[in-house]
Amino acid sequence: MNEKNSLTLKEWADEDKPREKMLAKGKKELTNAELLAILLRSGLRGKSVVEVAKEVLAKSSNSLTTLSQMEFKQLSIIKGVGQAKATTLMAALELGWRMHSEIGNDKELILKDSIDLFRYMSPVLADIDHEEFWAIYLSNRGKVLGRQRISMGGLTATSVDLRILFRYALEYKAVSLMVAHNHPSGSLKVSHEDRELTKRISEGGNLLEIKLQEHIVIAIGPSGKADYYSFHDNGYL
Image (cartoon, rainbow, N blue to C red; front, side, top):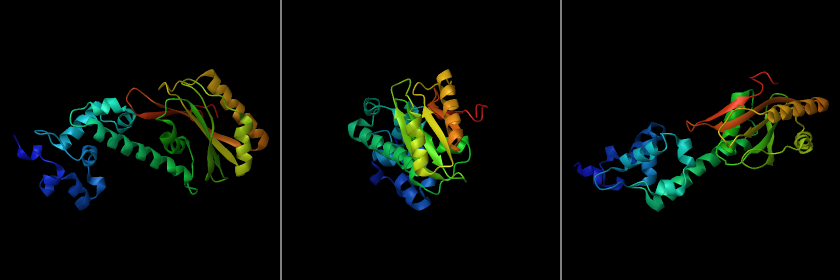
């Protein structure tokens, strides 16, 4: 048995430590397993902390999105993890989601198309177990003036009050807007109600000279990765 595999990170040779590798080469050079190993701190006798980290990733199909959705019980029963390390992993992953959500505070952000909107809103909508509907208000060059959650509902639907949606548009002095909602079911198939809502928002915006640029549906599919459906790209706008 390799003696190094039964040691903590502190006891490893420098060239084998993810922490030292980060300091020497930068965080971008570390693999996902090495980054997780820093959080886990120590492995088991006969199994290095990086090997434990690889097992954690294997349990989530090597998807950080899937890993972030795992429950405490699922993580804590992995050999070499336990309660304390499970809470550390969950806290770190939650901070990652919240960091991405703070992009919404960037007043210089410009949204041009469906992929821009997906990247902007997936950290907010992809990882929740109920449906929410958000509106993003834009200037004449597509700069984000603000965003608002218009409604939230259950597992399958949420209602949208157009008076609230356009009240915010007038408050922000928006020239256009984009909207997004999620499907907690994981399906990107849009319903008749989704299409009708898009039509109503578009028509209401035309009356106020506030153009609806895009509407996307975000969901996490069987692969564990977030994806989206664009009403504009599919000819509904």
